[in-house]
Length: 233
Image (cartoon, rainbow, N blue to C red; front, side, top):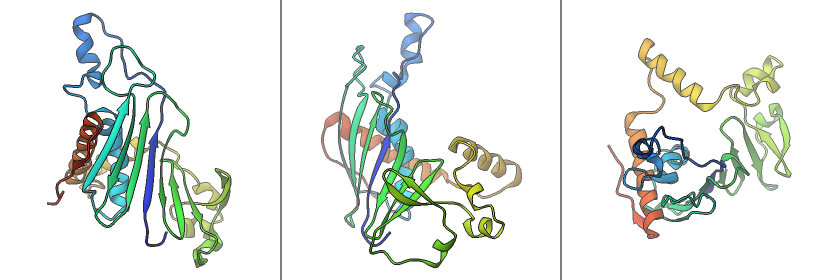
């Protein structure tokens, strides 16, 4: 990847976030995500998960500032919570993450892209690719790599346990996760409860990602830059 870092994140899903209620009195409870008094919007409800990916990628280092904006592009049904947002997170070392989310389009789905001077990673939650720069050195493990045309370029498919699978002649069998991400989160949780296995994501990590999501939503609502306090301990 090299020394520099910048990234983008996009969850696009054309949906309304509105649920039918049995009577008008129950509408507010059923559609709490559209209630600005309690909702933390797309930045908090969805973005926090993708911000956590960036935190992990940065080795547990957290951004110190966020700015954002939002608008209602499609669902003009009286709501005040934006259905489309743009957020930019800033780290003190210089890296940035540009994030956008929308309920008005499904194009692009949900993914993150991390760009470096030697290559870029595209993570799509069940699949991942490494796109190397032409001047990046070749690594020994690349002899085992599966390559695939994706997004107009040839990428190296990211496969867990690639060397082991290659030795078994089953490298292509490891391309793509067979289950959605929620499945693996629940499996890890059950193992922690029943077997005492260490948790993959601690309460502190979850809290920190949520705090960043809440402050990112504040930046969207106010259209101002918001300082993120040190997230330690």
